[in-house]
Image (cartoon, rainbow, N blue to C red; front, side, top):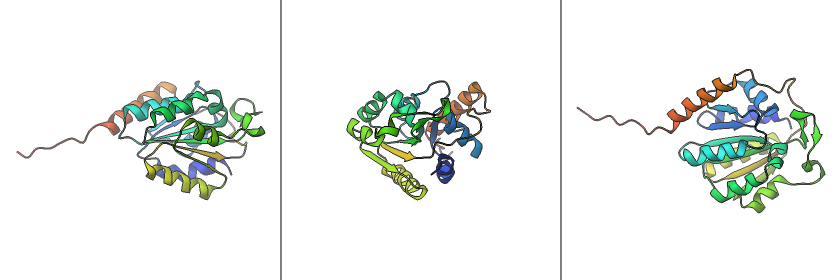
Length: 197
């Protein structure tokens, strides 16, 4: 299963969510499908996508939050799983693309290549809903169930260790930051009330 195919399969479901990606292949592939103002490509902060997603989910509880992460990133910040579980935001779906390698920084194998199980780690940390998937159909099903469940979910998608030709986005960091911030402010704003005159 390819990560790009997973992203394409759920792309149409991302319009109302604050989407945070980890650096590298995940960010480049999501942007290649089509950038949206609600996509934040976290750069130069490996291991922190789930932490950024958690902060958004807690501060904007009415906004669905989707984090697209990687196995290398999660393994660099395993404490992030217990922090997610501690605060248990009902509006956060954490997707971990597990290619068993640090593809974006050289392709070195990660601990998942020798048996470490991120979904089991998340469950042991207290994340209430976890799943590991190996097919596109199962990924889409798990993703849809997670959005509908309104409970913290970690989905580990086992994907091939293949990525784009380049691991960068063509959107300037500050431009992405301010555009995402404006989208988030608007998405979290209460509906305006119109009184009859």
